[in-house]
Image (cartoon, rainbow, N blue to C red):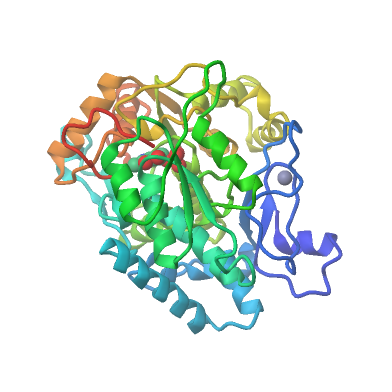
Length: 469
Ligand SMILES: Cc1ncc(COP(=O)(O)O)c(C=O)c1O
Ligand SMILES: [Zn+2]
């Protein structure tokens, strides 16, 4: 939805509208420009079966894709952040916002030893050759293992923090505690970012959380709460506890778009960086293959590319493919259920009609995985893909596939990933490559195609046989 159109139809045309807005992709609600920011759609009510996800939308006629080569992605892409425009409308200058980003980033570096910097993205020559891709094509690896706290997760959370700080008022202060359910990369990133901002953080973890991660969480000043799985109930117990905390007033400091739609925007920096690199080298991508747990990573990347196309810097989108494990593949299940309703050769308009229906019939497509999942790639074991609809949309509109791989494929991909590059990526982090190998086998990716994968997280313990999310 165009923010200007929405403002005009909601009677707000007397207030100068912003070029960005927060709008719900499930019910169409749009937050008025003069109201404090929100992270969840206020129209959502229990059992309404609508896929409420509040997301930042842009008016592409009033923005341009940033080309300033600042090493900090949040500075580089600041004009695409909703908080930037909220802050400017409230009287801050571009320099003030830049300074605030740099100050917070400096604090992150003080906690973690590194701040946010554009991460490497390059053709992996040895890997490309090994997998049979020719000189015209190849596999490009985006390396997030050296990012803040060792994964891409901090991008989502630093983005949320910026939105909170730039909003000012109550939300911009420490009045509301932050809360997250995770025992892995997301919690570690949340703890670093929250500590840098001097904000209290509640962390809910499962009983089998890695002791090394728990120790690091404690060292970062949090007091993780262990949540047992109740017999006879489905769904993640840490997620249930998180929801209770949110009901008590905590701000979801999570990487799940349905709980905090603001998380998607920060994650977009990852996609924008890939777009900028492809533009600089004149090497547009044919495929982006992304591992999916809760769906925020894929949702962010897909939205980043779509916005770059809408801002006229990309002529065409890559095909978006996703990768899940046999242990839990609720996204592939949802994708197949939506696809089954489409007529043969459905065009974009027909796909959008079906997606709009799915947005108000969520339970037909997405529900928690029935059995407790296990995988060597523990970071993609979410029993629900919270941000599923945007990801299914990205796949359907570009002819992408929802790939499901087994444990052997995940292990092989990790071994190949580590042997062919000097990146010490973990199994979750290399799961996208397992999808590439499967798509090459099926002939969906050809030898002259340009393919991107994201090595999202670093291996934390050599002996570890599974990774928590
Ligand atoms: C290293 C890593 N990669 C990918 C993912 C999947 O991201 P998402 O849950 O946003 O789909 C996770 C999630 O925990 C992760 O830790
Ligand atoms: Zn809504």
